Image (tube, rainbow, N blue to C red; front, side, top):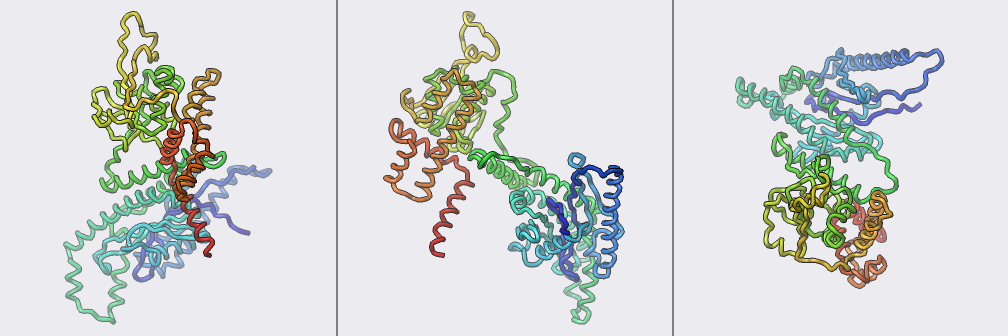
Length: 553
């Protein structure tokens, strides 16, 4: 009967002993609670729990006996906890998962997996310089994220000993997606061990400099093995002089397993993921990598500066509630001008004293674009260039540079307090028209009868009062998907296949992008190409290269 091993991941600290080779020092694994099953007649739940506890105790006892039989093959440098030590256990109250730490895994099948990962991480699978992260593995023995490092030791050969921390999992995608997260937090643990050991090394060198002792001592091949065996048996606890080293590593590894499992969750999607979904995933990964680099450069003491694009959603004050509401406030002609600039990729600037109102306007206008085309600075005290953002909110006293105000690739919406006098009292705090007046200006004011075909369809949906706001939102989503599919076809045809202008024109005709508003349609499609996900572009390029290699094989 095959044994099913329930293992999300497992973390182990490994050491290259100068006498015994690669050895596993410390291992933390996550044990999931058993699936609930209906009790048999005459069987109590408490009895099941007692039997589970007995099985766990039996496993610990067997491990202790196994360790005792191998004590002759272990030195102090190969050992973390005594054979009689019960290990460490932590329980996650939310999920019921238990995190167990001991020198070796509690299951024989996992022992061989960790053993092989240990040997490979400290022998053949190393990065240049022998310090740093590397990934290896296969479907049979699991996949491994390994980070090798040195610990200072005044008695060791070369004054340092070689260690590695490995995370073993059967899910390759899980480990690869966790790479930035694992690298950031494992480096913190490694740096803590190295800095602590360096203090011990410096203090020992001050008392008795080993370099001078070795150079003055006579070398004899007969006594060299005995000299090496006398210096090899130094444990990590003695190298760091950390009184609670293994408890601390248990806490670090347990937290790492819990956090790594919590940050990656599975979601049920109907059909293939949209471009917006792929772009959001990529942006989240990039933010984590940037945070990792920033923390490494600053010593983990600060975070990179980021614009908060969600701070205005829950704040009180007048807001635009929907695109239809925004169109009603601005007016049909003014809204069309503004929407045209948004769809063309021009910089849209709102300047006023109410950041909540400006934030709500951006939230509505961003729905016109794919997520990958949106670069937003919600509210700033200085002008930001167009390459940084196509949605920019400014305080009322910020001047607009001359080259921007005269550019046809920019539109400015000035929001001023309404001066209506006593004849026009404020109806309520949410009555935007009674509170503010809007002035839209641009060097490129398009005629109202021109524009891309997509804009005409959007306006038709917004002006149809028989359609509710929710229906308009779904209609807008379908229209964006329709045009994103056209963008994909054009990208594949023109960028990937490298077709000429004449062939591209034929494809545009098939896509319905020619005729009235053709210039705006093409400009829209080219701008929306910038919003395609890196995943999609990489998939296309890989498929093309694979197709080119196939005929020659």
